[in-house]
Image (cartoon, rainbow, N blue to C red; front, side, top):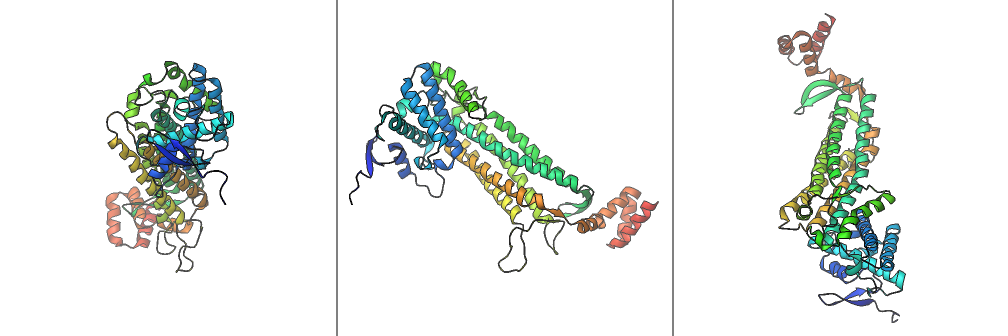
Length: 457
């Protein structure tokens, strides 16, 4: 059967004519990007909804500002705003198929949005067909008074800040879980180790409280970096030149963006970067956050590995804590249960550290006036936050909140040979304890008797 409508439509850009799926909300530049940059297992623009949402809000603020300053006819500007509001209320992931890595500059991300908004606005407000770009044009109207550079950069800051908010809640929640368990287990002593060798006895609250403090230190450092994301380059246009947009737009756009973000319940209070040329040359504020998150990832890896060690056994290992059994641990060994939740946290941390290296590497390759690797930065950073949040969430709910100490094992370990000798040193001095250690020749019962005698006076 011959279809009633052609499967494709023809659009034209500066390169030439090209076929676009007839029903596609996007246009020729998006179609070229889809064909030129195959996915290869990476994500699409629509797989980063926070970034897409943030850039749409920048576009909406730009349209509102252009109406206020008289740069665009109100009927056109309001049509753009209605189209964006529709996308914000009911996302259309099929309309944003661009590969997360699509050559430098993020232009395909920006043009994907421009084309979709123009097509929707034209169709809904004026009955125009997709691809006609009349009366609203992707570049002349949707992209008016800003560029890919400052729109994407601003969107990256908004998206990273929003993603960090939920992640920080999980980190603080984990620290609170450890504080609670530390208080609950406070009377119980455990054997501390240095270089994986027996050392002294401490309280579980000492160990857990130490981990909680490390997590809060990492969170505080990352939070300071997030605060830095409040400085944005919107109005800097191509490479930081404010002269590339109307002075009235430059003066008003950030206030309008803040108003709209606040109305939508988002963090607002953004201000313009002190040096717009620096903001074009480097993405240091985002890279700083990646560095802080990498440190957080390494703290989480260390803690998760500690849980594996303390839960090792059940007979040939430390056996100090018991983790919740969540799934069988072996296809061949009956009854075996592995610490898979801490291992997932380790895996998540490893992936996050790799992503951090990818993000930070972009600083080495931003030649001259513009660092074009922001798509690599923001997708890596958002992936990093997502995998860490997933790791912490399941670690909390499927492991930490249900783990319990082995009371008998810890009591025995806390009074084993070296902790007992340390106790004797506290009572009688180093030389006396050393002499007892030599005389005991590893006989724990003998050392414990001498400790009891010294305590009795």
